[in-house]
Image (cartoon, rainbow, N blue to C red; front, side, top):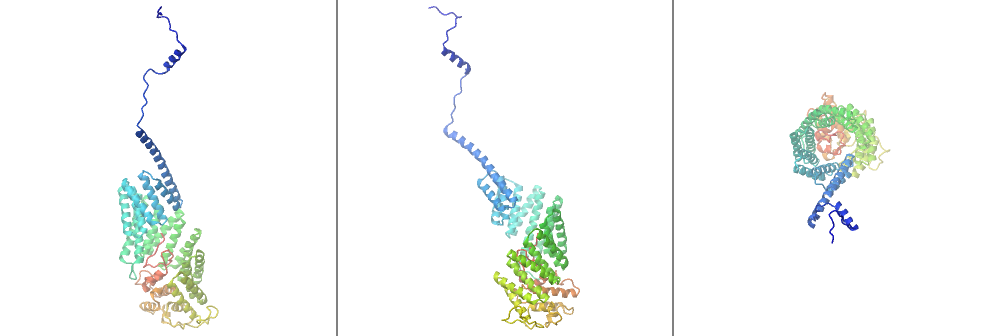
Length: 553
């Protein structure tokens, strides 16, 4: 068998050619072996990947809901905003700072919705989270929000603690804006506490209790510190708020000249910003302060501007209040025709608003204004309306006052028990009724029977020769019991006393800090008479300086 030579080439089949071609493509080094994880470990990796993905989606969803809630709250829709914030909390987030911000926004939304218990709950959550993550600025803001909420709930001491913590942390962190806000909030708390104490605690006539005065003075001090700081920061809007509140605290303290100066500054800044609502409040507060100084004509001008702005703002409730204020002011100026004009406007608006309390007050005022003009038939008509409304709303004191007024007016008109109210009156030449009540004496003292001599010694209340002490005693004898003492006729008698002092060359009663008629009513009759002409809705136009008022900020 012949061996093949070295140079001879072997014969290659088609199959061998394919194998050789494949071998050129595949690398000669060994291929890596497939590595498989255990089933449990592989599942864990998959779960972690899904969790991370879900977390990212959750964070995005929570933030989106919170941003929409914030947008709605800025637009003034706090109810819808709160719903979105609640949804964001339900979705959840592991970012505690984001969650803290959501709690803060939720607390603010519920605060504006006047759901203060919920507001308090979420602000507490915010404070806890801020402390947990060591966010000192967040802790300061949460403390301030808690203080504001506690103030509204009447928990003034707790509110001061929270606001003081806000102040301390802001000073520690060098946060001037936060410091200014904290000073303002502390002033607000003391301001609210002072008004609360002056209204609810027993007082001796003629002065504010010392603790009330000290509380209001503290409020004024914090407002002044706030004003100094916001001036340094150049925050004009905050300066306006500080001036307004300083005016209100000085007003409550009886420093009416200072109050006017502050309210004028408030008015200037409101005009600067075009803030019509703040401008309207400033005019109203200026009118009130001038009333206490006896400058009724100036007050009327400010109230007219209040009325004009309330119409521009389309705020019927404020318009009604301005009309009522003007009616009372013109009564003090003894311009009864114009007083009736404004009281009638007040009556129409009260009827449109369905405000039966305001409607009753308007009828009461109209009755007394017509009495001053000697128009007893019209006075009787409005006294009857006052009676009907008082019975409807369950105002027992107003009902008794209206009944007394009606009886006295019917007697003055010569009407018997079975006579019609109007059209059959026999006009007597004088009063024959023996009741020593305020309304009868006012009819005499106010000159309702012009040219006729009053039969009562009290009808000579204004002449100079009567000693002031005797005038006060007569006034006390003429009034009926305290619980029935909401008749405006008593205010008119107070006005006569002011006139008596003026005839003697004395601007205001020497034993009283102010000469306003409502203060005289309180001093001589008691605080219940002041309660009868006002409430906590801000509708008291001529508030009593002894009781305090809800000033318009």
